[in-house]
Image 1 (cartoon, helix red, strand yellow):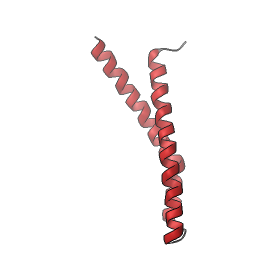
Image 2: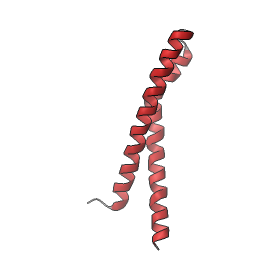
Image 3: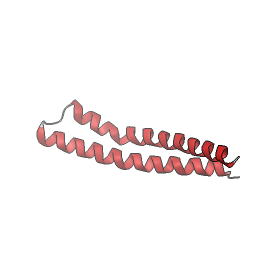
Image 4: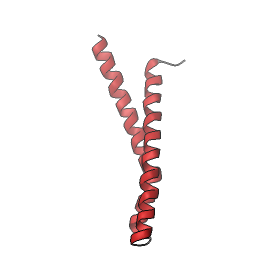
Length: 79
């Protein structure tokens, strides 16, 4: 059975995950191409490509935290 809390947290988590994937993709591929064109492949290229998995994790977790904060404020203001 879905509760409003679970549904809201799931929505915020998915939005954060998708936003993180989009940012990570743009940053990772853009940084890799920029490094390749200017300085060649180096440690910075490796770090830029790590954004492909790192940013979705960070933004997904941040989405869950924002969802928890939103639900807490909703509970407090509803009383």
